[in-house]
Length: 336
Length: 107
Image 1 (tube, rainbow over the protein chains, first blue to last red):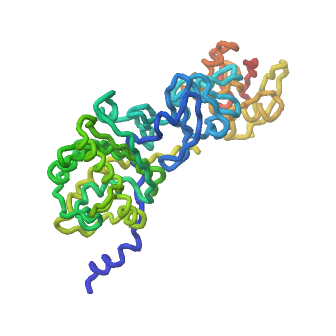
Image 2 (cartoon, chains in turn blue, purple; image 1 turned 90 degrees about the vertical axis):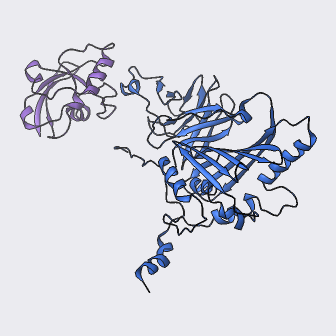
């Protein structure tokens, strides 16, 4: 009995289910239609609570809840006041960048408020009919922009209003890793073969080709995946935008779109069937959609930083190296 | 404990004992000089503004950027002189025995 094999057998005792911080990137917050001008509410995301609001000009904002003045929770009684978010306690007002713009009773504004933002906020914007926020633990400004997605942004040529949302007790990297773990498609999902996979990486982007063009994926950081399915002469697109709610809990969200095949009933029907397949609702299929079987694994597994991989497992470690760029060590404030 | 001489806003002059290591503001705030010291030493309120007698001025450490910014911010409401200091930024030590200052008017 060698020491190496003993270490291997004992290793699971020290493994964790979610050993990483929240990754940095652009993330879906909510659908734009769900936040009206003047609305203020609390949301849980990125392992903390945030105050989400839309000012009267229509610009969304997302701030830390606790007022820099005396610590009131702005999401309980705070209001939108023109373009500002106003704390209920003493009516200090902040803009979406976190600058204090007004203290109604001060004869002199503290000089620090003119030098920079004093309230922690996240860069937010509306795109694809959704509110997106840039998360970086140390307030670094966005290093890349959200891409143009014709399926979501063109005024015509695309149809489909179907969406899905699922909660998973795991972290984003584990969910995304299934894209390069092609062997599980056969054994967990029951696909007829282990499809070939090609993955290419460039900066925050990853391009995925599963089955020589059967599924082509454009992945933009940890929070946005655009997956194009090509089969039986049609294409359909799954836009996936998973949220890191806590370090160990993720909310998976997807929108499904396909070209407007309204002049071709057969193609339209096939595109809808492919969408059904993606969300696991297709009738009479031998392979299982992700919701039936992936959650069973995700919700209970531990993360092995040094997995025991064999040939045929696919480019898992290269994927992990690419994903590691999104983990940034959070700084702590010198003064609490 | 080191003694200073402070002229209060009513014109009366007082000998006041400041604990070594503490700021002059804390004594002015706590021992009857009617100084608010609202922000506690963060250079954010300007309420502990004093004029330091000229002979003592160059024996004090230089003003920080934060102190200068706060003095600049109150300058529209109250007279700021070359001898203006925020007393929260004057940390007491025995070499400052006899320091004389005047509490500035309220902004």
